[in-house]
Image 1 (tube, helix red, strand yellow):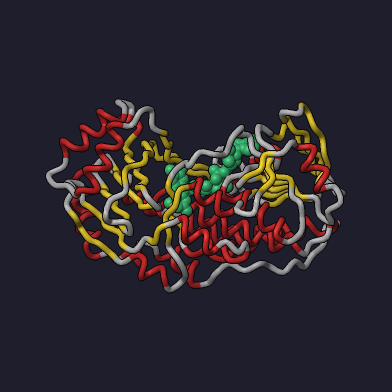
Image 2 (image 1 turned 60 degrees about the vertical axis):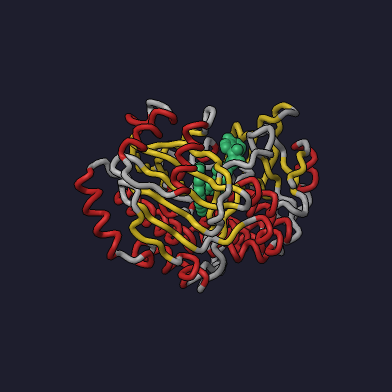
Length: 407
Ligand SMILES: Cc1cc2nc3c(=O)[nH]c(=O)nc-3n(C[C@H](O)[C@H](O)[C@H](O)COP(=O)(O)OP(=O)(O)OC[C@H]3O[C@@H](n4cnc5c(N)ncnc54)[C@H](O)[C@@H]3O)c2cc1C
């Protein structure tokens, strides 16, 4: 569990560390990195702009690239207890008929576990031994220097200033903090013009089943977590602007068939009061490491949801980054951050490219293309659709050697 503490208290605990590290953003990547550094004896300062982190959030399906971080934190048992194994993946065509069902779990189990859990449950697992965090806190100035990095905070205690040896920017896809580093300004984006609603539905008997309907101008996905189903319904923004209930009605009018899962998901979205609307765009920054600052997770490369891999890659990157930093001295932080970027950026961008390719198949309005896609889906294997990501799992991430020192 997170333990909210005033910022000055964290600064004091960190002051005598051999490496004074700031982590901006207590999300999936930032929390994983902070907890790994803490497990190695450091006291990184962890901040988040939220004033509470108790929300369960949305569903996450986590691929085996998270296993290294989970195991190193020693939370495997609580991770398994808080999540559900995902074994089957079913695809429906644009009229609601089942096209295929694949043993996705079998394919991924060769490399590790494939599990579903809520974002809140994952953060609880990662912070099981306690995790100091300063809430309601943001960075208002950051100046990178050769000897250290100056940071000014806006916090409930007022304006606070501090010096750090390394700053990890992990404040998500819409990061405000990356504007302070050269690589974070003006990132590339994929604008899909699609968006949709994320809701929770009641669990059903198919606790190991993820189901997706790839429509002509709509998408419906449902993914199991422990005790519930996370659901998403999306479409072109010009169509979803009618609101969830009317958009659900328009989907229903286009279906000739359905599954009990699909019915339940449509009901849940139709009945939801003011559900979270997710804009389906992604972000790719040009450079992650600069001096003593570095981007992590969605702040470095934010994902479309199509491959379900953003959190997995954020945790993998956090494991690599904290490994590179663990042996770094104050003098070679810059080299450690550069080594992390060289090792991890190609992997993350490969996964992001895979997600973009799938978006090109999924986010379609034309029914002619939907028919062609239905045919292709019958012959295409799940292994080929996720080929680049499977290749990443086959050659797991490594903590890089830090060979240079900064001037
Ligand atoms: C609906 C949905 C479903 C998803 N499903 C999957 C899935 O099935 N599998 C998967 O692998 N990935 C999935 N993802 C993607 C995944 O959630 C992200 O890739 C992952 O959370 C990225 O982690 P992060 O730490 O970079 O960012 P986040 O987890 O978003 O954390 C960012 C943190 O920074 C904080 N913050 C923001 N601004 C500031 C600021 N200025 N100062 C301080 N703190 C700030 C936020 O409050 C937040 O706590 C999904 C995403 C969504 C939205």
